[in-house]
Amino acid sequence: MANKLSHVNSSGEAKMVDISLKGETVREAVAKGSVIMQPATLEQVNNASMKKGDVLAVARIAGIMAAKKVPDIIPLCHMIPIDSITIDFDLTANDRIGITSTVKTAGRTGVEMEALTAVTVAALTIYDMCKAVEKGMTITNIYLETKTGGKSGAYHRKV
Image 1: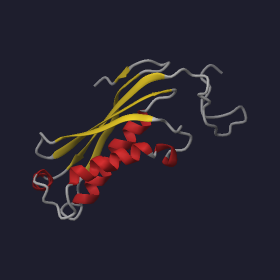
Image 2 (image 1 turned 180 degrees about the horizontal axis):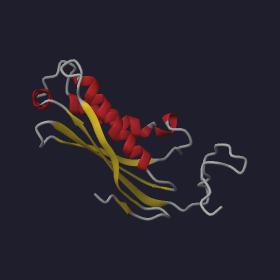
Image 3 (image 1 turned 120 degrees about the vertical axis):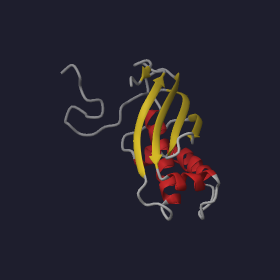
Image 4 (image 1 turned 60 degrees about the vertical axis):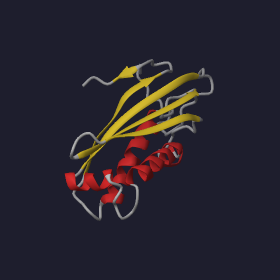
């Protein structure tokens, strides 16, 4: 079988991939997502006037914390020494917050799951902090934009 599943052993049981013989390379992953909301809700976020506090500051910390906990919440993910995590917000639209997470490591496996998890948890935190004002927000378009490093090389999402 040419394309054997990497997370399944010969008996069909789940297993963690052995990365012990892989060489360390600098790896980076960038993920994106959005939270769509009413302009009035976004205005409160922009003005830092939500009753729960500074939405973006809390969402940034939540995303960073989540990226560091990926092996605890996604089965078979490796513990990775993360060298850098950034979470940026785009507030240029009047009805959404764009979220970008960039995660870097010098390691034996990639950080795609960490970047995707950071965006997802940042989005969930924005929802949580704003839900008293608007329950109809939509978390949408979470995707891997780019990844570099490792054996499989670079990936750049085609739109």
